[in-house]
Image (tube, rainbow, N blue to C red; front, side):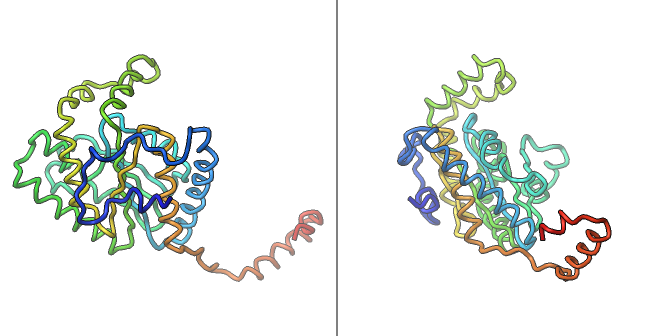
Length: 286
């Protein structure tokens, strides 16, 4: 199965999350069954990110969105953790600071977009300004409703300057969210994750559904596609995202840059040093 085609929101299509199976797991029976494939794609991610860093010509922005407990942190830890943090910064966006709120809504996000050679991850993103802002009526409708176009233009600007964009909506159902809340309550190691906000947002489930559906429908473009990832099974979420990111990076046909020095001359200098220091064993390796 082609995961890019299977989970991508086609531009111009109307999303109905009620028709998406959050428990989908393809042909895999269990985490153990899928583990070899997950590990293989994690290794690919590591190698491809290294290649992007070395090439230094383009970048990748990964946006993670989802309801509370959907698994944004887990995705970063288990999938994108395969990448070298030197070339893969992660930014989490919470309530805007006073300085951020004094600028246009995209200002704080633009500062954290990736430079050439980097893979940047947004844990929540510029879509918060058409999600929580909309649901809680923080600004009037005539303000947030214009932001879809601003977001599309912002992403096109990034793309035109060499940044490829992948956006993942981590799809869990209402029952799975409650189970994950329960786990946070009964597991002392997860108590720190509990917040009043998690439960305060629960009554707004339908309002968030409508907000997510509009964002996914209005802002999935050819250059910045949305993917709806079934996430009731954490291991399948990890597999699907690692596959999509890996296959996207492979499609870029990246190349290691040509050396800026004469390799043969460097070899000669190395040999000279080895002979001078009597390193016959090391010389034999050549």
